Image 1 (spheres, rainbow, N blue to C red):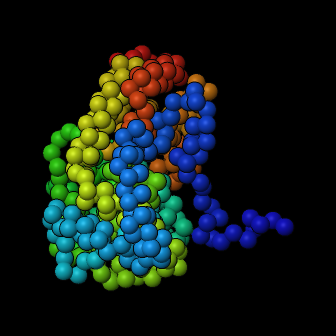
Image 2 (tube, one colour; image 1 turned 90 degrees about the vertical axis):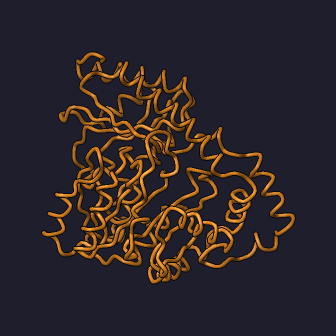
Length: 401
């Protein structure tokens, strides 16, 4: 039997995440991987979480080990709501759901809103998890280029004029994945104006927003929204632990209600023990001090990576200059395909994410690649960028800066 012939239209053409595939490379201890999106494992608050887990199970195990409500552990939901409220607008009709990682939030919202053929505008490049989510619901995906200050608003509006099927715009406005670029305040305000004009919903995915190590904070799009048009996706993965699998969505209560019903089909509720551990951590300890420690470490690593690129990369390869988050994005002359270069790099024990995987049309040749700096130590960054730089100089025939 050919089981592939039975696959649904929703998934038959989907490709697995190239980022997840690179995890297999990590079994080789010689590989220096700049491909993942993981936080620094040495910065996990392991001792504190171990003590909390022990206390929760000992003192409140009957709750932690029992079924929970789909909307999430109420004390954690209230903490999330209060934290979001401090940044600006939360309309009277907003609600919050705790989800099993930010990715599930995107999926539940997409499932609640999208019919086959509905249009979704994505930044280009964009997060492969978001792209694959929209593909799985047979959405028509339209890419709009990301400029140095965020998505190109003129091209966005032109696209909306031409396609009446567009229902959702997906953006990672702060420390964008994969580019590391942050959308300007001016463009955030303009985006809301355009969304109101064309009656579209904004998915603001913000898993990295608290990891700022340079520059000035910019209000979230959600905090500027007065119409309930923004669904806001957050995560504990980058500020506490990805293994806890905790995220949240703040959105119009009617959308949250639909998402709750969809989640009941998927996994009934988010892991109660994880939610209780997270809540105890953010109330027992100073979460902002913990985040500050992460920002200081990631800022040093990002600066080192950019300094090393400026030293070892050929002049024809450029990179973005993030003020926070986990990633920066590199661009080679357009004649090169970074999927082929990735294969060459792996032979030298270096891994990165080819840019094609972050594009709406992931089959086209692409001359960009994503680099992660949070998961590698300083020695690995220095050595890995030197090796990669030498390879890129050899391929392009160009000399270092």
